[in-house]
Image 1 (cartoon, helix red, strand yellow):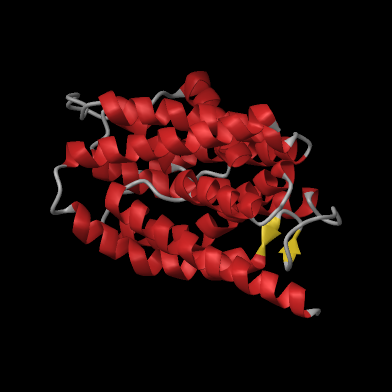
Image 2 (image 1 turned 60 degrees about the horizontal axis):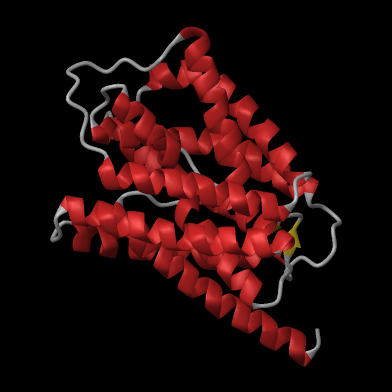
Length: 276
């Protein structure tokens, strides 16, 4: 490997360490982590290093999903031990979520990166609006949609999440909260949903990106191994720090800060998509 390649790899790794630390801190601080934080930060790093816009988005999404697999296992296990995972809902919605995730990842592999950037920006803006104005549900009983409605919602969650590289929390927590789930049970169930989405979707991103040129060094298709090695451990390390900070701040302020973060990230990605 040439000296220039080594220096580029070192700069790439250092930037990824910053992404992992930032993603972990924001995830712990605001309670919603995974792809909704990693994708925009990793996208910025890749584009600043000269990676083409479409390629950067595909790699950011695929790598984010692979990172969710690693970090999501410990999260889902912890929530399950505390009894905050609705296993009945997972059995009911799981197959449709998995099918949607595989379909979305396969479709994303054939979709222009600029379109994925615009789609992520639109979803992030919708989540920002929800975070800014939503209130805790006042329903006394939890009742998620069932039958065809439940299957359709589950499939759409898997499809959309895998296309833009996010886990279960970003879409599932609002859906379950609106269905009357207590926030802790909604978050716990969503963490398990994240695994159902991320495992097949990340494999699909490896396959659909296999053999394509102009990927960052040490990439398996659209999944970058260096990014996973740098982001995942730092995310685990910094998330508790963010959580400790969060307990000293008003919850409403945290929601506003996260909404602002999403608006800024989404605006940047939408601008890049429209001008690319």
